[in-house]
Length: 305
Image 1 (cartoon, helix red, strand yellow):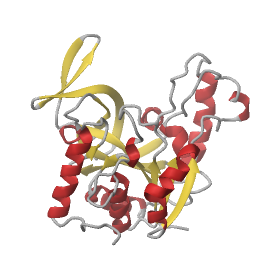
Image 2 (cartoon, rainbow, N blue to C red):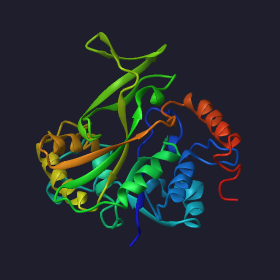
Image 3 (tube, rainbow, N blue to C red):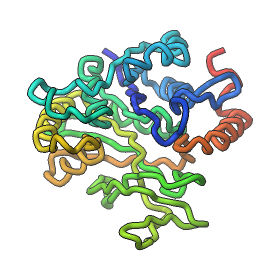
């Protein structure tokens, strides 16, 4: 059994990137992609297994671009997020659907590959070194409290905005003890000078630039799979066959559990600058950021040389 596992959600179709699979776009000087840096940081922090959640049709490309390289560094497993991977009763309910079911289903796909506390990340986000250290410390020092325990690494909103368009972020409510009390998935947050703004029903409103947001970096334990399984069944039952875009999303699932007081989520803070490739135009600034981190000595020129 591993001490702690890194689960990387890489099955997203990359709909906003335009042409090409955004998770596999090189950003480092030797063809490294964002995932290379995430895995490097996770291994450095102590994580000893990596599970990739991918689409089966991308497996060959994925292994060529990164998988084969990572298999030489750390224990590695692949799981597949498939549209058809739903309980039998719902297999014929959604004939018009073309995409898998979102982040909740992606994590559920890992249930036979993960037997230790695990950290979930997006494939196309760079989170910074401190996030992995904080999460590893939390996940490897859990004690049984009788309640489901989880953690979330929170980022400062202004450190997570794109210069090239709106982004979706989970705005977090955090109490005085650093525990998450609520999360609101907020779409199309844009940068306007020093401000973060969102347009709702034609009205613009400002969001505090220092707000804590979720970037889908969640620390969970294997008991969470049972909750996801039960919840996914209920979600599919309640979803109309015509709703081809409905998604079973981790922030919503955790938000519902918080409301029912069935989960405790510790918010670990990262002051690191997040970066990611939401839009094709983001790639140049990400490459620049990677060059700066190498120049500052945070990474070697060749990660696995």
